[in-house]
Image 1 (cartoon, rainbow over the protein chains, first blue to last red):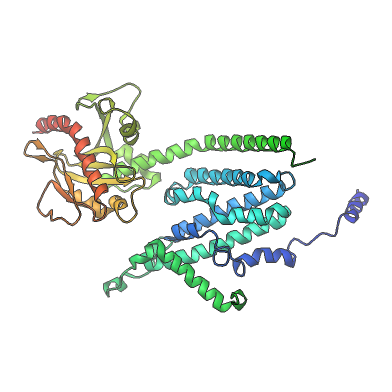
Image 2 (image 1 turned 45 degrees about the vertical axis):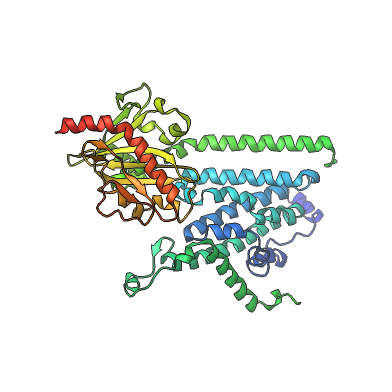
Length: 225
Length: 239
């Protein structure tokens, strides 16, 4: 037994450690240097639409995380079997199936949240980040790196979404995750919630500010011209 | 294996679609009872909300059982009917409004009782600007004064027509009456910003959401009309 185990071990290529520096970068790059929203400007539509409340943003991020991991893994497993002429359609079918699954599960177990997210769960299908990662990464890489890539990008998408939602919910309704955080005393002194924060344009401006801060801190992101 | 051959492409696509379709059908079928239960509990919550009884989804069924003492069905002429295999709660007024001719619809009425005081809850459905709107209006025991209401919508404009599901709009109906003397006049929703002080058959609409607001008024006028004979009959009996 031990002999055969050794023999196969010798035949195998030297295995890359699970968290090699290359793999770690798959996780960390999308959080900052290669963020899907602020750098690649993908997935903006949903970032504008469901960042009014933190709770929605969290559920949306988790849904995208689940769909991305699933889609990246499946496409990566099938990458040598998918006929290249129909690969976009195949990706679409896989993503759509996963999204409907998520939608059905939300409807069954988190009915309130699913009503608030309403059409946006369905729109995960068209979330550019997912198709973008399938096309650019999962089709050419093994499952494990694809998995890390999915987690990294979904996290990069999620943290921006939640950051924007925190700003909008705090200043728009004085709450965080549905709990009031701005004390009533403030309102007695004439403090008002900023109604503009509730509207989609403020999400764009908030994302813009995040991009601004990010670029001023991370100078290698600034294009030369 | 040549993955770019036509036959391979066809086979691959066919298998993929069958596998995906089968698994989705399986999951959807499996989760259906849970989803239906959610919709049912939400309807109970909405009915109770129109008489200002707050209920979480977990309590909804118990509270509904406790407070709703009678469920009545009316036909288009206001006669009490009891079609077989159908209960008032099962009638989906939004669906019937879309699919059934007006004469063929059944009109449910829920009777709520708390400490001996009765309230009458009427479900209704109509059209907003972009899509269906619906709601429940509760009447005091006199079957004339509005005790409370809830409205909701599918696709009205956020911030404008969509505000019909907010308390500030729904509360405006409280205390309004639908009969003027013995004549049925319903409650009219007038263009936003109008002066409705002291007018018991008018409600101020939502500025910028006029068509949706009017839709609410039309929905009440049309639906309540069916209940008039029943209300009048019971008003007399109560006297």
